[in-house]
Image 1 (cartoon, protein in one colour):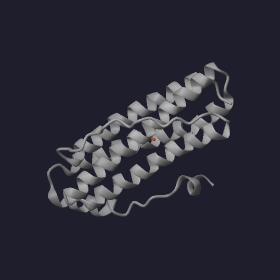
Image 2 (cartoon, protein in one colour):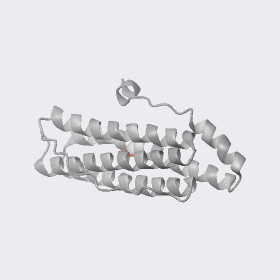
Image 3 (cartoon, protein in one colour):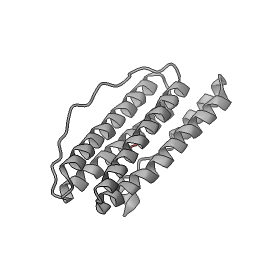
Length: 171
Ligand code: FEO
């Protein structure tokens, strides 16, 4: 089992991952409404990945014989002025998630809980990727500026992103 303190902290992280999923689903709906199906698709894949993150943490607690406690998900934004603004919010949010993961790693180290620390390393690597991806999108969107054709082309490109279940990705 993991300690009660760590169990509570991981349950909080499960909520944070579901909040992330909710945020990206909201972005997906917003851009679908705005006639940008590729951006909507990209955020929909992001939504599904965040649910996988929550499930990974839930499954870990269960495998250790701990309690999973699902708590209410706070409301999220529903509108963005531009795709650039949405990706800026994405980057800001992922930086917050990185610090939450780092806090969990610190706690598991403090408790000499090596199994939990090992499980969390996957999230440490994932956060590097999450921040890099969001920054890359921001860079591309800044290059595009207010060029409508550029945005149209990027939308077509993002329509290609497909969801890969975490179980398949990791084997
Ligand atoms: Fe689950 Fe985007 O971090």
